[in-house]
Amino acid sequence: MTERFSAGRGAVVTGAAGGLGRGIAERLLTEGVQVLLVDVDPDRLGDTVVELSALGQVAAVSVDLTAPDAPATVVSAAAQNLGSIDILVNNAGIGGSTHVHEVEEQRWRDVIELNLHASFRLTRAVLPDMMRREYGRIVNIASMNGMTGFRRSSDYAVSKAGLIALTRSLAADYGRHGITANAVAPGVVMTPLAERMLASRPQWYTRANIELKPIARTGETADVAAAVAYLASDEAGYVTGQTLAVDGGLTATHYVPDQFSDER
Image 1 (cartoon, helix red, strand yellow):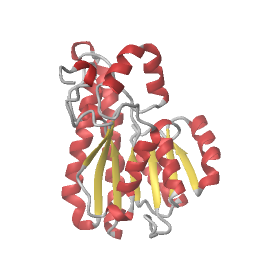
Image 2 (tube, rainbow, N blue to C red; image 1 turned 120 degrees about the vertical axis):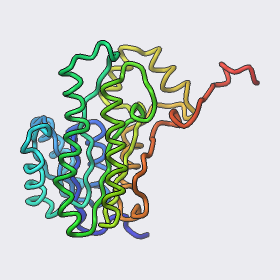
Image 3 (tube, helix red, strand yellow; image 1 turned 90 degrees about the horizontal axis):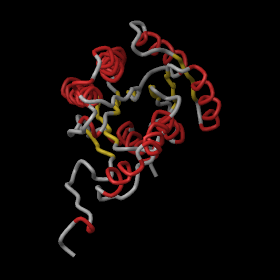
């Protein structure tokens, strides 16, 4: 069987100290990719490096991605530890959960700054070397909230919709340079954040995220990591500008379970 990744591929994964980012890094490591983990939390990041080191070549840099010098810091760390950045996974982000008329100005700016602007700046920083080498895989972690309307999600939804639009623009601009850009839009995935949501609103969570979609289970980190691994691989070279929803069919259908339907 042909390996999906050429030998020596290097990946940068942001927001990698836990949750989706950690799961994505773990999957890439198991497929032979060298990975640089990026996260703002140095303690969790250090623990994650230790825990993943048995899987392959992994390094880390702790940086606030909203800082002006963050892209240069990441690129420098990648040069030292990976040699080059073949794959960039923009995963770092924060959530938002309130109605438009209740969103505070600073909170709006904070969500957009990390979820969209920081991803743009880091992508801009890695593009010149990808163009020089005529190879690159950019995978942006968006959300189903960026694809359709969800209540109490304005700031987060706007940031993720912007990330999807950025993905398409990158695909249009850089395909001739051997660079692909795609997005993965997860539904609710069982991360620590989702676990807290489940604990606080169990009835709503069960109905909205299990009963009202074709695949009646909550997503796992591995589901998202598998999608990212494909889009980041050599074999996905003819796929660009796409947003792959990993949400159990929630955004693709208007699913009505049998118990809510007149048809039997």
